[in-house]
Image (cartoon, rainbow, N blue to C red; front, side, top):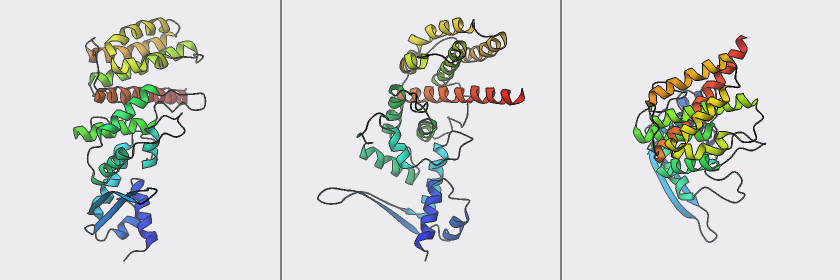
Length: 291
């Protein structure tokens, strides 16, 4: 028999994605085949209603909980756990005071995590919509797109297609057109910011992100012209650097942009944008240390 505190420690470690490498888990998982239950209830003014019953081997629960955290992790430098409340918070507008994530959707997300199955399509669709419609503000630059939202998209796509299509960082070997378009958009945005000296009130992300994510062919030719104009304000070294990045991605696209993107491809676009931003930022940070 195990004490309540021992079981509590194991479940806390599982939520953090540490199910296989902690002393507490090793001590309590002497019988990973023991049957384990999780029951979900929904409160009601008149009675409590049962939402689901999870039944599986304890070892499977621990393994799936660890996989859930690994799938959601997209920032190599961060080991922060993503709790269900974090996911729920990203499914609603940050400006809303009373809106809550749909209860049926949260149930399906939890069961996917418990069983190690693909996440519901509604999760990806909702996150993509939030990224396209939400905006950063003066208090936070991580409303529109942050580690949690990018990680959710990564997890949804990789589980749906049963392969590691989306890696932890920008992947030059990923030739998906939507992913490449997202990276190209990030480069155009950085060029605009550097050319303005960081004094812009409105960037191309504020004006064109949603349309570029949905209909690249209708937006990117205009963005390319804007980027060329902005680069005239940059020094020669920066121009060479950005031209090299742009040429590589344009070669991967064969000079053509997709007319429209499906919801899954919009997710790939968003992750490409996120990861290229990280790549440029990390490169600039490393360069600053070397100088």
